[in-house]
Length: 253
Image (cartoon, rainbow, N blue to C red; front, side):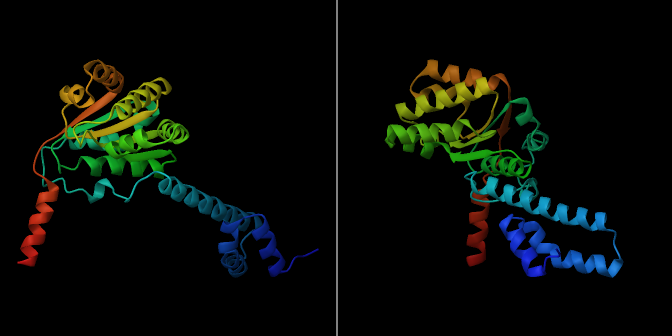
């Protein structure tokens, strides 16, 4: 029995084939106009459905990542700070470090683009099928210390499960709570054993981490696991934020 277009529409809706539904009218007209063979038309319709599903999965990965903007390396002004480790940034952007279970440490002065590079790598990872979790490190550690035991379990799970974890602006507040320090140690240790990657950005040189953690032994343990399989990128130069602020003042004058 031949189905009417209304019945086909209902069937596609029931089967949740939104990609087919979105392009079916166009594909029918295309087949009629070009006398396209059935298998060619059918393969195009299937590809439409696959494309729609991939697009929705990619969007879902972004929405659950914690990222607040879709930044790329193309957006970055490399000319302003020519001494930045450009080649190392692009190498990180290839995402090979995720397949290897390696880490990235981006250390340097405030405003030099560390967060931009970390976010660009994280966004690239969502586009390539990786589950990502981006957090502002100090806020995440502070929230953990105030949470109930059940909520702490959920937060820990959120930091352990993704393929890539980005801890942005670590030690921005100089000192984190004991609960936050223990969380950091647990996350680094367990992700190290699972070979799941971490990207850390910080204004603080790694030699001072013991001071901010309040425990040199803990700092050594964390750094040992972070840096065993890691790329260290050191950012020097002027502040992009100060540059943008100066430009705004000049425009307003």
